[in-house]
Image: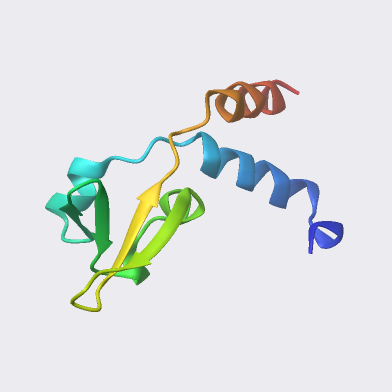
Length: 87
């Protein structure tokens, strides 16, 4: 799959990894619900692409709901994206 990525695809991926997730807004919008150290994704279709790309771990709760943990926004991705946009 990586062989088929265009320069635009790579830039988009770096941008998504560099974009912080606004958890409080996603919760307020009914997209996520906080479940301890995990989040339940209530509406996968409305989960922004940058948040979807930052999913680190998926688990299933005892009630059958899917829970996720997210990566921290990558500072190195932020620096790389800024550098890519300077050119």
